Amino acid sequence: MAYCQNRLGQLSDNLKLWRFQEVVKANNQGRSILILDGMVLDVTDWLHQHPGGSTIIPAQALNVDCGRFFEIYHASRESFLYLHDFYLGEVHPADRSMVQQGRGEYPSDDFLHQLRQYTTWRLAVSGGHSGDHLHLGRSAR
Image (cartoon, rainbow, N blue to C red):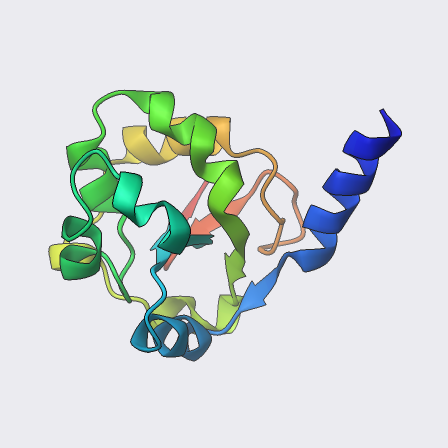
């Protein structure tokens, strides 16, 4: 039990608010850092295991919010269970308007609602309410 609590503490100590330019810089340096509904996710080491291949994410989903892509390509919500493993923190609230939507399309409200049901462990960064998250310009609960 102590080991698990220690690991959880280490994880929470490493979480942070990311500036959008930090994400872009990391991606330009060869990492694969995704933004999904404001979450910052590092899939670099996992990319070669991605069932859709290792090229689709870098080709479509870097430096944009990948919510719509995630919704289209992941019909099963099982993939939500793994997001915690890649989670680095959240996009800084001041930078959220800088993040464009992949293909200019927002994910559906239903998708965002389901995503947020699975990601209650996220850092609370908007409005001071632990369950509130902003989807890059759109408030949702």
